[in-house]
Image (tube, rainbow, N blue to C red; front, side, top):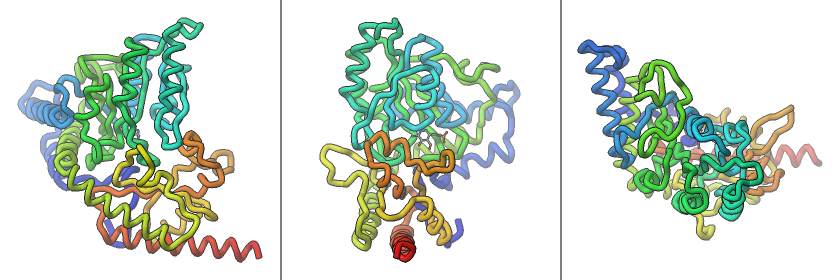
Length: 395
Ligand code: PLP
């Protein structure tokens, strides 16, 4: 990447690990065979897929036959929700702070969206009430077939207590599956600590240094949901479509490196993230860290800095940052010409006006101290310029 770019958007996508690029190249350049074939070329490609599956399983702490390679994190999430409803009937349940890849299929199948707490975690009391009502049939005879809880929130970086959610589901709705969207987790959370609590887990390679367009669905204990994509019967009928051998090999490589480096990276990036936030809040007033590092009882990933900046609108700020080569994001969307704050902040009860000044800065394996220093400098300058502009307009 050009040295003029300061990339602080790793939660959106993180650069590929060089070792992952190296691992995938032979399957783009020389061994391009379809791994479902029977000739030696195909067998070599199939061996690469099998070895990747073994590596992924060892890194996650599950069995190789529980690993299904998919086309992206969205596909894994969609398969979990739509496939659970298709297989068992009943309702899907999630919180209002989930990624749209979960939220939309839950809504589309007439599921239940429960509230979130002020940190973006599912409201456990509301979940309990929903499951208790469903146990009494909810009046309409439709029980709950799947409860989905994200491991790490993609906007504000909160780590959920997946084990606590799973315990409630097992107790009150023993027939329901537990799914976790762990797309944002691998850089920060040891997946072995999650996998035993859930039936389904979704991952996406481009969030941990693999390529875009490759995902993983873990189905514990064999097929748990109906497949979303049917056809040639690849992935033991759980996800048809010719394997992306290069993508799968790179995904396994990136996941294993991410796992091996996690502890050291967590400490390194936590220090850089805290420095970034301190530089900004130390130079500007009216800037709130949406989830403070000292907030009681809340765990937040080391690479996430989410700020609400008073007196500026995210869109205008992102424009100036982009001009200066700083890549960040805000997660607001422009609907019908009016800026709408993010659904996650709305679910957390963040005031609409405050949420319009949201800025998400996310760090990852390629982040350096220089990125953080330059990022802080450019952000402070851009916010100061926007504020003096609006003061001038008002006077
Ligand atoms: N779930 C979460 C929490 C995400 O952050 C994302 C990507 O932003 C997705 C799902 C979708 O993953 P993909 O981009 O692989 O479709």
